[in-house]
Image (cartoon, rainbow, N blue to C red; front, top):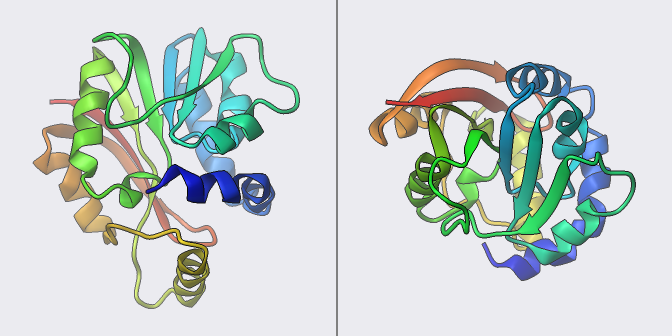
Length: 200
């Protein structure tokens, strides 16, 4: 995904996320419990909505995005003191091995042509007993609203490189050497599957 598309989309993305506040309530609560007192990395943070929510309970949080425009949006407003925003590429992270207790990537793996490369980088920077939290949109043929929203995103240049079903998304992790710890389907504007993994 070219950063320029997300740079243009950045100013309205946070408003789109606010419309999903109720749908994402489970995700915010669950992640906050998992990352308490941990050193956390978020990839594809967008405008930083999740990062600003959960950072106060972490020991330290670094939230990154490939898009400079998204990071500029994320830096606006009030930020917890233990939260830092940076531009970084999920396929080539500038962080040392075993640097984080938890890595979060929400609704982004389906945008990458080769998401397995991102999983390798995540495995590298994650500590051996660390956790990967990776909720992602999944495909359901009968979900009309989801299909419409995907079409709208396509009009502005956002392309889904992968359209996994829930089963295919879980298999993606298993096939790439991750142990599934917990997962749950959740309904929002588009159906998504909340997934927690550990390193096998």
